Image (cartoon, rainbow, N blue to C red):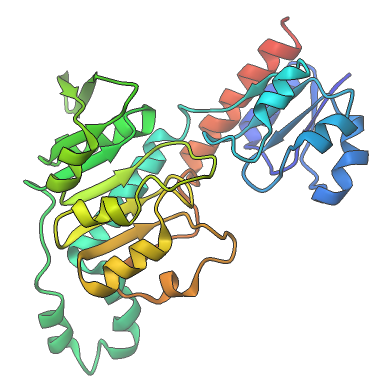
Length: 320
């Protein structure tokens, strides 16, 4: 009997699909420190971002046949070491693309219309200071006509471009591995119609100097930030940065400095360098729209992730 530990959980539909294929799926959480002994009872492990699968854990579990990550990033797994031991590592790069892109859009809209501020202040000051608050938040801006820089033109980046183009934004993508992409925009109406747009990438410097909004959709395994002090200095005064990718992609001290000086207009952050204890300065700045790492946390994305994981694990463990 094949056994899988879904240590960070899995959608019920994905669990059911694996069980129907003859795989037992255990969703009881095992503490990280207990995994070296407990994981020896399983053929594979499914994780999200909480559970770490490092070299020491892999060495402690000689029966481990497969590792799977419900999501895109693999920074919590020693992928190359696992592969050197003959253990494949699967992830779900397509399942959550729309959810992550929509969250990035939500932060952009929050910032452009001060929704993140008004939602904090109106419950306490809305009755007494309604008129003054209305005046304070009456200088918002539309996204239409603005320029969106996108770093990373993979699945999420392309989904972000699709949304932005539909909102009539100008899109400047940056990706050293991609020269162009065809963006298909579906128009949901009584007829099955849509648009296909060829989107060419540009160099980083040109994008930084033109972008009104910058959103980042790349994997990140640590090291030097992609957006640091030098990159921020090239950006327009009043521009916005959105990070729903990984903590550390944007250098947080440089970001705070640029927000405090007024060089940047604001930032939308779903990820942080020190999760689950982000820098308190980021949590309390009125120019930052924040969320607790929920990019892929929608019902639709979780179901898609569960089903994609089930398909990959069944194909590898049962059909091979």
